[in-house]
Length: 518
Ligand code: NOJ
Ligand code: NOJ
Image (tube, rainbow, N blue to C red; front, side, top):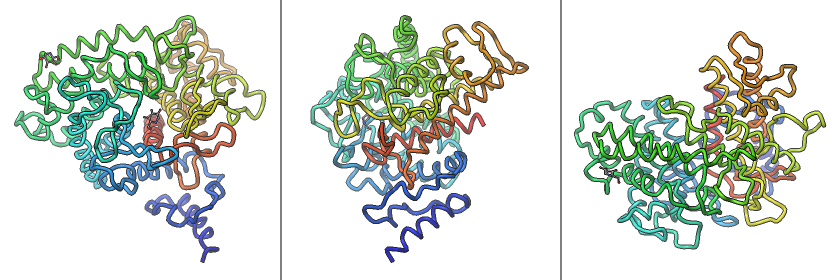
């Protein structure tokens, strides 16, 4: 029998890889004994397209495994919670982080919005409703950051899985959480409303809507409470998304700006005119504040103001992706993924990480220059190896590597929509690196249109370089399609918290961006 197990597994993997019509497998771990080499059975010849199609289902399944109700990994977690990872020790990630939960739930909202009447969506909507209810009670839970009365408690970054406050020492407050949660809930509200239009327009005081936004009852309105928090605290320092540095941060400010812009639109839709004006005023101030993150001397953005670090950071990519989604046509772009500043920052980060991590070493000297897909970590100075600090440095992260792909896909999508490309002198280094293997020479202050070869080659290279980053994710994903937090800088094997919910969310978001451009 034991001899049969690997055989059955191989048969399944092959079948699964080539017969896309069969439903997802039960978790492959069911078939495995301890000590099984998780990498040995990988169908190495699988194309990127075939793998992405397969991994999409696996990632959604494994993301949902970390979500209550219904998840396989959430025993003991309160309904509506999203745990960061099932790992309860070495490291213990069995908590709900407001940030991780909001970001990954936004992916569920997107899947729900694809087709609100599908069977999957009715399951998702049950989860999204529980998530929403739980956020109300977390907002009102006294915690070491403060309480609901003066809203200070909304800056608390993480809670126990059972919903009680986490009282250990921590980098707190973190002011991105309320902004991200408001963004996710506003997206859910819009998606829900588009399939139940009478609720929105009737102004009937429907309980569900009132619990999200009620002009006269801010204390009971989950979104309004988060918007109030953002509007009153965005200019105060807090810890960064990596929970290490206190200050003012690009990622945090970008999501706060988006929350204020969308919040103002929402307030207006609910007839809350004073609030709409107030949020717009904060959004304007944030817009004026954002250029401080551009460092002209370094010629890239920096993640934290006044920090001694280089400032190159995956938080720049994430801030752009979460702060200015390509779908948003109603607001002026600020550091959108396709902006000159984000693209040159991406290039600088890639150049740093390529030489920093041995697994990124190019196979031939020819590839030493230009822009290629490599494993990306959080930032150059990182020493967190997924378990503790390692003086030799950190590792590449799945969510950062997938985010680089997403930035490139978004840029390609933007190009298709714009039907022309103007290369500024700021962005020139990026386009030169992108096109270094081609005979075409991008010129500064030049506009290329549909009839120019440059336009089409840039578009192709954006997509294929995005795919190179996805190939890196594919290479380091194990045979079951599991994504941990990191992969080893030397061996490439998965490291850190296993089945990181955010890794699955980031992969799915990059894949959605890829589908939009193909
Ligand atoms: C550590 C990461 O730096 C942080 O961004 C994240 O929220 C937690 N892990 C949980 O995944
Ligand atoms: C007064 C507004 O009416 C209210 O709703 C708004 O959001 C606050 N000012 C700012 O806290």
